[in-house]
Length: 480
Image (cartoon, rainbow, N blue to C red; front, side):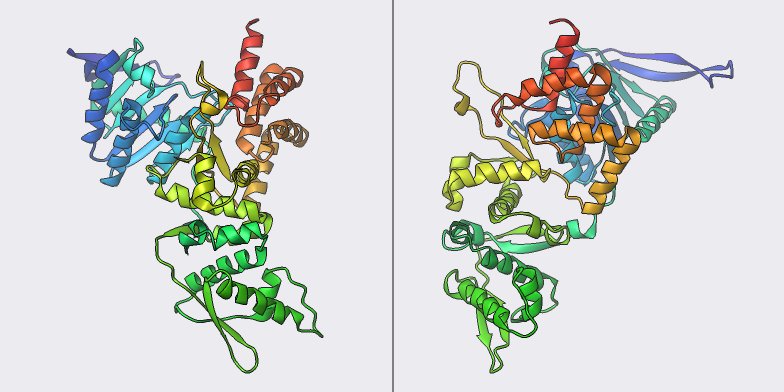
């Protein structure tokens, strides 16, 4: 790798005919020299790394690939106190492939920004410590780093590096931004893993449709987590009956009996609590601590009303997804075949097929479906990969849809949601936004034809999405 020192001639402001030079030291890091050079620079970063990248394609189950190692280097830099800021393309045909890197970086505390889907970010730019600029054609993909002919340079020079800040400022103005995490998303309620994995507990409730016992146990876990004291909890009959959606009448006290009946099942049938009654039939409950580790339910599950919105199958699947995501490495994605899940959690496979489908449709869970391998049967694919999408309150969701309507119009957004609904994506704002962009470029008639083509694929087919529809439209436009 040759190092060359030369002067860059830079024009001043457009209306000022001034030109000035900057001296930099440049190193050619094209082709197979790119990865070791970038990795070394990021590993030695002291203050800040800023990245703008069109393609940052990684797979959580392939940590030895170079693109994955570069993402890990960013996370390691963040862990040692470096300010890490990343901008990623989110255009219809590309954003989905960048999702795993986005989630890994976000979960590690890095500041990650999506560029608005109707704008394509095609840059491959890295600035380190306001001293090093790495730029060229190389994407963070296996082919880009290991196979393609790519051109890239590493330039050292503080003045040149600082001059690139204007580019990132423009990206920030065209990004979706990053909001502070709400307290109800940070605060978690611990629930024993055995609640899910013991066939006599949650699985048994699921099989006999014991929604009340399921909901009350989780509610008691929440109450214990919010209390400064552990041990016995006094049960407020009316509050508990209201929560369980039992009928409460002022002149009758049957609801008190109904609440006690549920508590009794939690003790005698499921071995999850102990309870005592005093002479007035006031009740106290103590959760049995089962051991075997815990999974953590965000307080938003209750604050955002998911406990009332989901049915028992969806709740069970939601908690399984939380438990599986917390033991996955890395935690951004997790995968396990539905047959394996059925054996582990003692319910039938159909429960997970429908449960995951409902969570995906509600835009709670994202699914990355494995590609079909040529020459192999459809069912021989690897298991689906799952990840959680950010939980939003009803107010935040409404605000996002209003913002989308302000950029397009209410009628177009409604039309986009209806079209996305053909792929069960009507609640996915990004999918709807991508559809609106496609309709703007190709027209509603052609976009609808493409979605109808994709819709005919099996619901679990990896190509049944808007990105594949975008490819179809592009091919049609090119006459293929």
